[in-house]
Image 1 (spheres, rainbow, N blue to C red):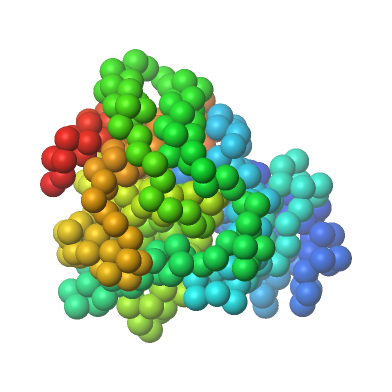
Image 2 (cartoon, rainbow, N blue to C red; image 1 turned 90 degrees about the horizontal axis):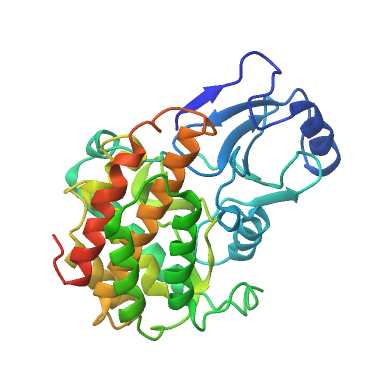
Length: 348
């Protein structure tokens, strides 16, 4: 995990007020004591994620970015609620601690710190033996299938979303987001949107969907990379079509995605199981029909192209913190083109 320290001991990094948070922790966080310090965890390109410590305990705090161009994508209460609900299921999550919308100028979610590597780059991933990389890849697919097997009603998330019409709403929503964040004309985005709207099938089913599932949104066991200790970054979670999660996961394997994570993203490694192997593993574990999977891949490309453009727009406005934002905009056009290829069944 890479962190960016605050400017000095006890100082507040951009986006936090440690004085206000210290009072909140004293009143609401069991075991807190001492002086609260914070570091920005580098790597996230959307919500801001901070590591906080009192010298004995560690927590992770997430809050919306400084310059929110896509308001619905940064609902911290939703993120906190799904993490709390999944505790005790087969889906590994960081233990939920608190949610608040009064102490800072924005809402935030607080969870316990989970120790373990987060593999963001191919270099980090390739430090593992090939056999462990393969086990890690299959473990990620198994966790995704486990998430999609959770009954939302049983864990108190029956009202977490509206599964009916999910795919049509996704197509419409991400095109609306494009209109908000666009910094240029890109005909492939318009063409991809039109084709997705035309080809949109009925939902394949309904489940809790993560909405941004990939290797660097998980924390692995430091002693066993074939075991996922926690799935993180639930800001886009809802109830919807589970195959949308799988499609997005496979889009992250496209090298076109790499600039979004500052270069050589771990998810693009050819040492991970192939797209065909991932799809087969998921189908075996979930029993779901993948016969119309081209649409879900196209939707995944569309979504990530728009997300990348939103990050690029915030960077141009000086609203980002940390490094690695200057090349994100380069991913948008290749991702849009990849989506059009996916709808034709042309998948590398």
